Length: 354
Length: 214
Image (cartoon, rainbow over all chains, first blue to last red; front, side, top):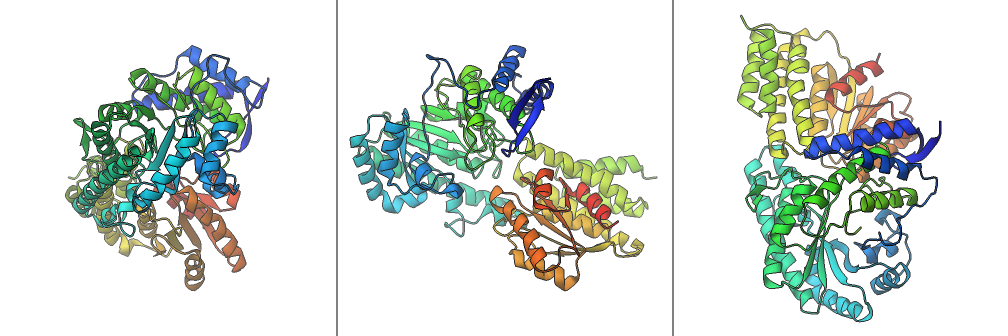
């Protein structure tokens, strides 16, 4: 029987029989449906996924007319950073990085990002960022975002003024941990608004809230509140909300937005919160399981993203990169995996962008 | 007469519902009724904890709840452990355990340490964010049979590989068995770095630790 060369979730090359791939595809979609309480992929969609894996070409793609918008988060750092920073270690300026993505890689949107890539450290250097953004926007044609992570962790000790839930919770100080998160969320929302407002004043096209909810439900809460305030004050500023993980970790667990508890939300519910806050684009994340095969991971990711697209009223740009969307956890994601994931996300999940 | 099945069911439920008072009450009733403490831990409290862990992993139960649940379990186990002290025939082995440097997650590691104690191990819990040299130095000092390391992040799991190398350098690797665990760790990772065993949860950790020491 013909064998399929694919990978495990940690990037290791493996060979699987057609029936093994089929089994993993079915198990992957079942797992997503079970966890998210959403529909499984149909038999026809699973067959389509199998065909993508059976394709002998190392790189796969979509037909003319099916192309979607390709965006890059942390783009300026992707080329400069070394492998430990998910980059390729080429000494370049941020401006050169932006121009290479636009002119050589044909990116449809691009973004400027601070080297730390978290909102909080941008505050003291905001004037520099405004200047850099203005210069970059004058030489680019594609929409130029400013991207950063809400990263609520930077507001907890030792990096910030609030008690660290990682210290407080193991001591059983649940009330104190919750108060610390509420305080941090308030500060973070204020900082995100301040930075967005400053960038808006120099003509910023959009803000990309990247890796949202990395520190749990309070991180998501802070971002949603910041987005709501930003859209109220600056309606023409495009806002993209990209996620950190497939469900919102309940580190606080009692935070609500638009009447709904944020903890435990999967992508199809997260997007409704982003919509309610006024976001223009949503970037769902589905985590890759390193112990499972790529067929299992991709079927699972497509199941979540497809349903998110179906319920969403705003464009969905799925995250496809290291450890997310079905792509293995590997510093430089293998091209065979990235292109298979991209094809499946476009043709089956029907995403608007990647 | 106390119903053994009912005690086990209540033990599991008390952990799942994060009811510390009930967990302690069940432990005391089990001791008074002479029910095997190992059975109460394995078939009662641990089952509840496993279910709570599964719900947390699926996003259906949240961290504060899990913390209270694990506190209740640890508290109940300490009651059972005290009752078992006289029963212990001999030391099962010496274990050094800790969370790898840079990683502050230690709920799972803490439960493994408690369970090892329950099963007769002399446990040296180094805590969290432990420099690798501390594993090596402590293992040498206490003449450890097993070193268990936990990592919850991809950035810290590489420390488990370095630990294997450091143990070799110190001439200890042939004298101790190594075990790895943590959310991002897999059997494949254990094989890759040359660890003697991987355990997904506390129950499996105990079984494998006992197996390793024959």
